[in-house]
Image 1 (tube, helix red, strand yellow):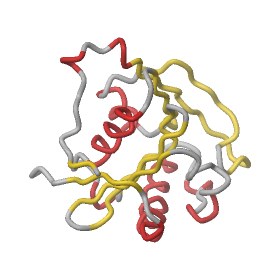
Image 2 (cartoon, helix red, strand yellow):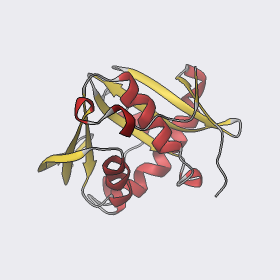
Image 3 (cartoon, helix red, strand yellow):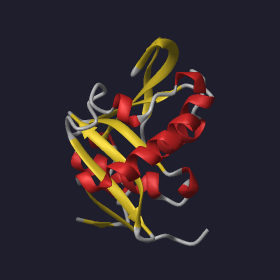
Image 4 (tube, one colour):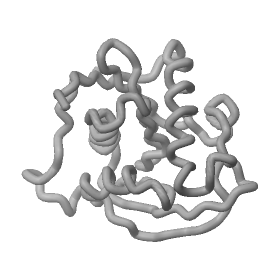
Amino acid sequence: MPQVEIEIRPYTNDDWDAIARIHDAARRDELRGSAGVEAFLTLAQTAEREGLFDGHLWVAEAGGSVAGFVALDDDEVTWLYVDPQRYRQGIGRALLGHAVAAAGPRVEVTVLDGNPAAEALYASEGFTVTQTRTGPLVGNETFTATGHIMHLDKSDVPPDDRRVPTVDTV
């Protein structure tokens, strides 16, 4: 697949419709292999309660439209979603790289069990599973899910081995 030009920039209120559409499509994919699509709630239902705007929020533009978004709060990647029509184009990797670059020396993310594509992405960037927990699904606590807590210790990665996102950032 050809390399797509990706620009990562801060979220603006004008991006809401695009990130809501992306979340609502991609979240179903995320839940399909874990808690089940019955646990799905829209971004409009969960954004405030789950702290979407608590830290930093960036969007990725590719081909002139918003293709994904990532949120970072206290060195934790709390949200990372890519438009399902844009999977496997480097957008998630670019967003992750941007968030990691902005984070402190130890970065955390939780990946739902049953989401092997996400787990593989994080592992390929140096994250390792440090804990696995089963309990209420964050955002829809009436459902149970298993999550893998993954960490990246940036100081453990030699500078020559760190991936540098090849994107334009604003």
